[in-house]
Length: 321
Ligand code: DGY
Image (cartoon, rainbow, N blue to C red; front, side):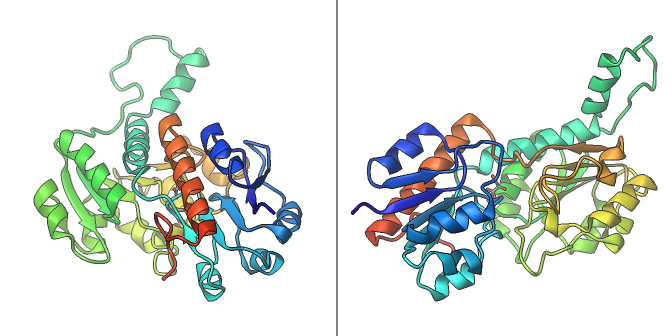
């Protein structure tokens, strides 16, 4: 009998075909709608593997419902949606997709930085709504990117890729990380500093840290109060790393200048969320790695992780400790 693989979202065709050639595949056939938890719990009952993504919660209930499970792989580098400790306890390898999305996610981070600094979405609305009457000296003026100071919190692969882009804009680069990264300092001319100094000094504060118990609400009222009034906050990591109420207050009271956000505490963010009332907020729907080429590579790597798991081989990239 063929193994059954449950895929929780419509995935690129080449990855689907790779899996279909080796197993029976159930795929939740929607690009927009998340698989309902009861459907997931039903489908995993006879599954050997789950191909998941950032929006599913692969928790103890899912593991309890899937007694034949031999592999889980997420089409993402972050894996905070998976109870990895529980998987490890049951001897189930969990795979993820580091490396292939680094540059694409750094591109999005930098796009968000520039769009926020130069108020591009606001300018777009301004033109479309017929509010453009004439050229005006201070119309939609923003902040300079070139020559500014960028502070990167979390100098991993993506943090480094953001720093490389910043270098091209003649920015001074500060970073804060769990441990110092001397190679990144030498290569990028970046300077390590404590979080407080980074917040005080930076014109752009970029949050790139993974979601762990240590980074939960890392950016809160105190942290936003340390930032310059002209500073911009960018988050392309995870929404749980930020106290959104504190961020809202800082933006509303103009204690910081603006924010560019790709991730939120609850996703999708509700359309009546107070953050969305503010003009000094630029948002995107968690699309950090969303280029066609990168998402295809991520899907292929996830499929490969699953096939390896099913054959009892070591996954390309596992997160079990
Ligand atoms: C990740 O990989 O963790 C991103 O958030 C989704 O692309």
